[in-house]
Length: 378
Image 1 (cartoon, rainbow, N blue to C red):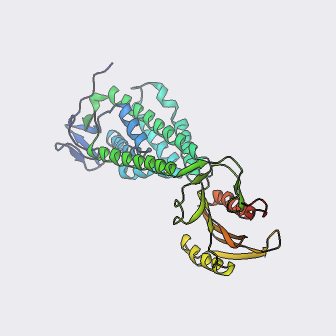
Image 2 (image 1 turned 60 degrees about the horizontal axis):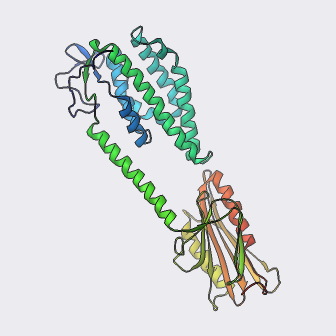
Image 3 (image 1 turned 90 degrees about the vertical axis):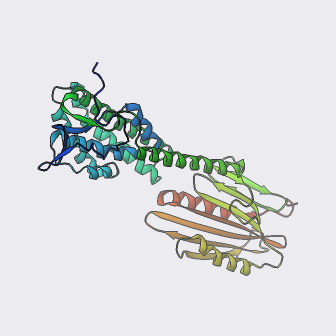
């Protein structure tokens, strides 16, 4: 077991990009040296890199790659531009080329100095990283379940931590060749800043989830039929994850009832309009105000037909805005119950794939919104 490698900076506050003042630069290769030896960042415990990566959702490994690219550049006098490596984790098509070069140079440096085990896993590492990044991207675009994102990110952190172990092993086995600098324990000030921002982010996520749960009146079963015998209407909520939420969650407090669907990022409200409100006045009001819910001017249409009992006219207005990657829709359905009109108003917006489910669900709910037969209403 080798002793801990020396570090010319010890536990001072130098960042990954800072070099000791006594360092010199080889102008031909851009290699940074001190006391005639290439400058290399001191090995740091594996758990520190893994913890930082997990808390920052793998962002810290972009900074880590800049440092490792600088290490290889100084060790091998190789042609590297370290700051460009910051962007490699976010550019999927660049990863096989960048990491193939990194592993090739690292393999040449290692030679017989470390276990042969490390020499055979480069291609598998790159393939697994690209697969995990692809899964994460598809999850962000909602082409895959969100839970896959929370598996892919820790997996990516583990892959980079494994690579960190490889760098540590090589540095420790060849410590006499390098002049170590920087922290070999503890975080730099900018890493603490990353941790603070990460903790604030997770605190906000947890608060938003807590606040969302506070507004939930009750969770609803799949394909829930809502009967309001007192008001005299019914509607069907197809699908999963529907919840009844407090009045005022999505409205100004004037709604009769409110529903929200977490997985479909949509909501449904029911309003009771006044005795003096007519079908035309309500439809006109809604058409003017619904424009504010969209990012730009939507396409709108209205359809009117006789109610099932033939005693009144029901109105169904649909506004939608669809692009290549996103879709938004609102639906307003008016039915007459006794002497007043009740309105089902719904809105949903999401990526194109999820939007198709939203559109189907909201249109089905609007169609199911009907007045109860006179004998059933109280």
